[in-house]
Length: 162
Image (cartoon, rainbow, N blue to C red; front, side, top):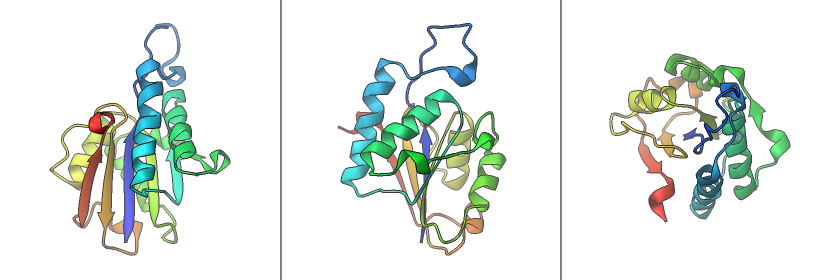
């Protein structure tokens, strides 16, 4: 069994229009929502073996907050440039290259590509609001089968749950 969590970064600030997009921080709502969703996942024992994040400040900050709630060491977060300004195919390529020894992976990234990939994996998912997490469980031994076979289970988590 392989479990893939697609995580859209928490709400970010647009207060500094001259700030490069990659450097935009989380806003107040994002700073409230990320710990809440991370704690919801921890309660469900949805702990990853690997966290991979876009290098964008808002995505990495979301990943770090989740890591804190999920007892995942910050130094073990993998920053992957291909998760920023990506296409759904780019994201899927990252998934396909994952080590098959790893069973549970969280990818932190951006819209619209995360929603597009989530919808490709399951037609049930057509929107991922900020800080949403889609959990896909695949009955497979290899990450290369993700996107080829249907997920055995699909669960959407979001800040409004609690």
